[in-house]
Image (cartoon, rainbow, N blue to C red; front, side, top):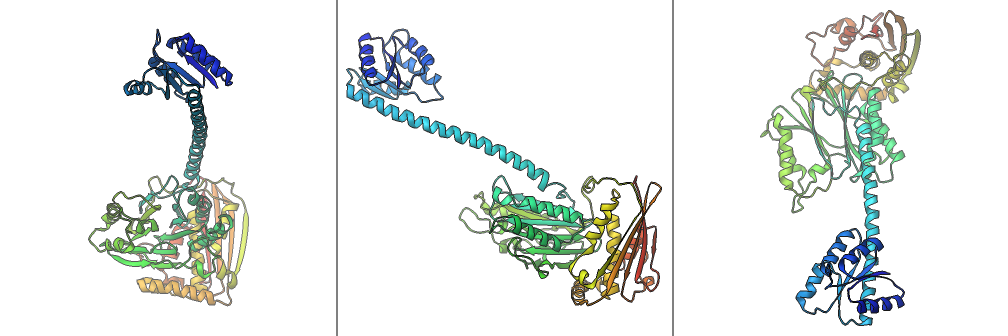
Length: 564
């Protein structure tokens, strides 16, 4: 060791110098406290032997100065003193001393104390190195968390419409990263897709699954895929990229203000709760599917529950972190207590806040054990866009050109594939008229639905006038489509450039017997039913709409302007 001796007694200093040198130590001496501090700063010794009574600066003052200068490292100071009373020895410790040796000192005791101080110094050095390593690791981790937060902000939340007027939400992550995933995005037809996902565990390990699922959610929704198809694709992605036993309980909801319908796919989340205009629970939609990422989905696993959307409906969905929240005595909040709030005591506008207040009151500041999320859908405001309008994806503007494409869809294809996303993405991939995707999608969707529902499946739209009939209609649709043995639908799309834009001609023909188009309302005004609005809606957006022949052929012309 490098040892500094600070003592004005030359005899003591010489004896210590010779004794310590024989033991292999490097020895430095100073004759008073002021010189001792200077040597301490210059030589950076590993141990100090300090006398108390010295000229210029005594040992107490010198020890304080040394401890102050070497605050970032441990350098033990052993006081050499003739003082034996408790008060004097305590004063040595208060001044910064780590031990003391009474005069006349014993060589064996001196060596033992030096050895003990060396072991403590080495331990302190190792601990300081470990602390520095942990500090560096903490800085790196903080940087990675900042990068992670940036990625989540710019990938997971891109295009998120959680500020839509019809949505109220609250989420409380257990740690920096939220294992609950909450997303919303408009469909090309003007509906709204909403998803609440709850990944296995919590924190970063749970949140990483949000990246691939959010990409699929926003991408497929923009392309016009249904929530059942979203569930299938997300499930496949989870199984392909996520670790074994990592899954996501999820609920997907499509709100369609035009059709006044709700579609729900619930895989592993608690029951979706629906209240009426008095805040009373009128319907619950339990989970009928497994969480995403567990097993491959079959065709039945893509099925959704469809119900009529009343304007006064409020839809509530939440992660199990809410009903499994515990208080300070480890008692669980529970679904029963939650649903007891849905009894009409709270008005519909106060119910969301009432749930949050009750959960917080129950917890009473208890430590959170899981991520918590709660979402409310106000159906009366489902048709409103967020401030500033819906977020639009920018597309490359392509000069209008001549082209024509045609599809022929057999009964087998119609049973297994929804062709609308394919059609709209083919069209937009060729021409991509900026800002017209939603209207073109709506036109195609209405014409295709007429061809399939009325032309091939022979469904009666009038039965959708009642809630029971609404559900019956979609039940018949599934049954008849599954039983369809033959039949076809042919679709032709032809585009021609016109001044400042283009003209898109659509022709849909089905193999059915046709239907009487004159009996269907041709105006939107006063037509508030669930059926019969399709033709009127298409007519309002197209410059031409004809049903030649017996009604199994629809021809529409849509014009778009580059400046619109």
